[in-house]
Length: 117
Length: 113
Image 1 (spheres, each protein chain N blue to C red):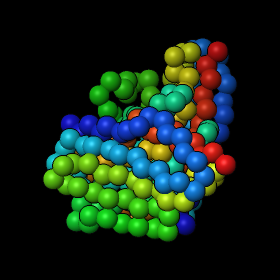
Image 2 (image 1 turned 90 degrees about the vertical axis):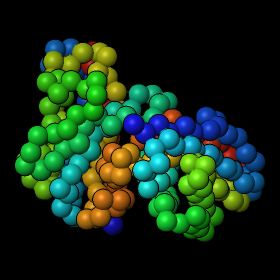
Image 3 (image 1 turned 120 degrees about the vertical axis):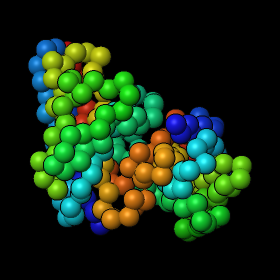
């Protein structure tokens, strides 16, 4: 089945530094990937939609200059948390669709647990 | 925009009993409704989904029903097992775009042996 690989699974960084998270579709091409944030015991909140070869579309309230998204190829999207602060500590998950239809199932990465100290 | 309400937030059942989780949505344009199971610290996994042209779908012990008129859909798990214990999220496609899924707040299901 469709596999989405996300790295790293865990990262601890100091306040003020930047962290890059990678999301790869291993056995399919994903024109569009999605980035979510999940706080403990809460639901997934869509942060942005990443489109290959174009700028990402950010949801309201998400700072595009803080959460940089790059979708350089059909199999790779990256999320960079710039100048991270403790309040950015969260679980970040990417997803991608393996189908062409707009309502094809989404496949999620394993997520990245970010802790900013 | 789309708003998805999910109930209950926690659900505890005895092994072998049935569990039902309900969701309502607000955008009548939504036409795709997946359900995800998320174990602690892991990624959400799609367990079943339904499209608006179907009223019910079943896959072994799991079934989903959709009432477009009332704008609600439900997940039914029969013969629950301890391994069914997890957080379940419903979602609805916002504005007809599958990628723009709006998730419910989740239901923590505990199945007691």
